[in-house]
Image (cartoon, rainbow, N blue to C red; front, side, top):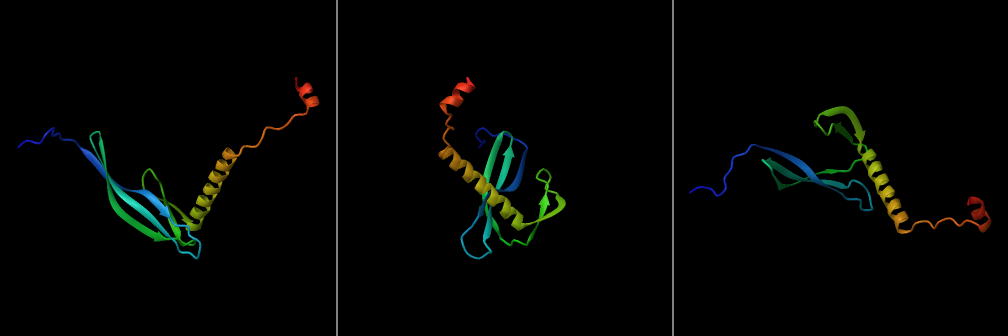
Amino acid sequence: MANYKETTAEGTTWRRSKQVVINNDLGPTPKPIIFMEEDVAVIGDNEFHTNRGSISALYNPDELINLRDPETGEKTGVMMKQSMVYLALYSLYLDCAEIRDIEANPLPAPQVAEEDRRQLT
């Protein structure tokens, strides 16, 4: 029996982290960092995603991370402490929160005295 609309195409597959969950509960470290993985397959013009579970690491501020080039996956030769990732994410959160708060409660326009208004015109 023939397969309905069967085609032959070349494709590419790879595994990636599609989501990162960082628990920031109060209390002592270490906290788990969970990487949710998926396999991606691109066949012709079609893209398919398949969940593949997770891997995790415990947060350790002094643990070193090998930084990699996102384009190639190759190690750059530079290492960074996990505490610097925490610093960056903490700062990103506060920047986002400040922007949200300013947008929700914008400062009122400055009041210009009548005498000053006449000088501006």
